[in-house]
Image 1 (cartoon, rainbow, N blue to C red):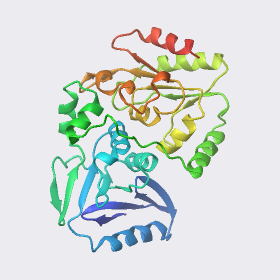
Image 2 (tube, one colour):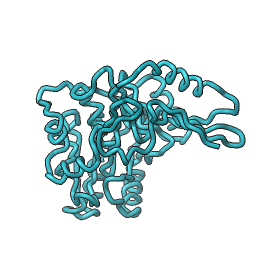
Image 3 (cartoon, rainbow, N blue to C red):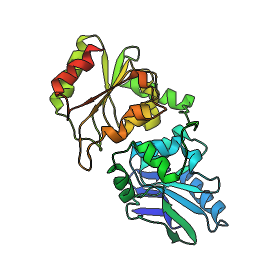
Image 4 (tube, rainbow, N blue to C red):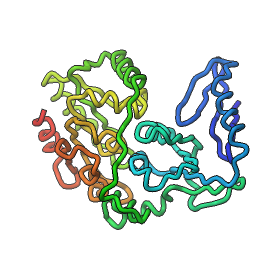
Amino acid sequence: MQREVHLFGVPIIRVVKMESCEKRYFMGIQYKVKKYAQRYDSFAAAFVANARGVHGRRIKVIINNTGEAVTYARTHTLWYKPDELVFGSRFQHADIFHLFAPHIPVFYCGDAAELKEPQCINGNHVEPLLASSLLIEMNNQGKPFLQSWAEYLHADVSSLSYSRAVISSEIERNALTKAQALRLNLDNFVFLSPVARSCEALPPAFWDEIETSLRARGYDVFYNSPLFSISEAYALASHAKAIIALRSGLCDVLCDLPVPHFIIYSHNKFHGDLQPMYSLNLFPWATKELIYEYNVLKQDSTAISNAITSHL
């Protein structure tokens, strides 16, 4: 059995009843709750009750990928107004804002791919923060994404103070506890992230070669896992000796850490080469002196692997 609680016609909590528990999805997080537990239902119901008197609110919906959502959170002072509500179409959107703009609550609303333009829902103005079709059009111009985003907002980002990550002691503790359960050597490990939606996967042999080389040098290896939230991955990666990743939205999350980053670009199905628009070195919050970028469209993958491991 499945049911939903709605706010302004948009689901903010989804409950799936299982035999021994309920899976509840709220604010981008999945909870497994024992039968008859009321905590999250009560919270959602209270939120709806408190919002009943609100009419004509503006609602911004994030329908883009992780990397773009990181930019939205870091530049929220350019577009967010205190009376607005923000919804995310993916679970990770809430976690991203909790990390980079914790004062802005983001509520999970599920798939909003059909939201292509502003519309009125139950008397409230609902619009995508940036429509997917417009994002593709912007990227087709080949400009750095932050520049395109600033032009879209008609904003000057030259002197903007960007928000930084906020890691609570609870998130730090959760991340390290999970890592210890995996028997990871927290004093000497490398963080690997071989999966990306934005870039084509590299052959498993590529990552096997890197892992073998790292272990031969005495490093332990951690592969990014869905067991870790984005905030927990950030907390864990801050302890790594290095980060090696296929270019993905997670790279945007981690790029301000004072840790050497080895980032690999591959083919993107929409734009071919993403590096001109999404090079981490184009973002002012990135630790540029610690970022090394490689591109399999221009370099031999074996040479890239050798170059990365030679730094470690």
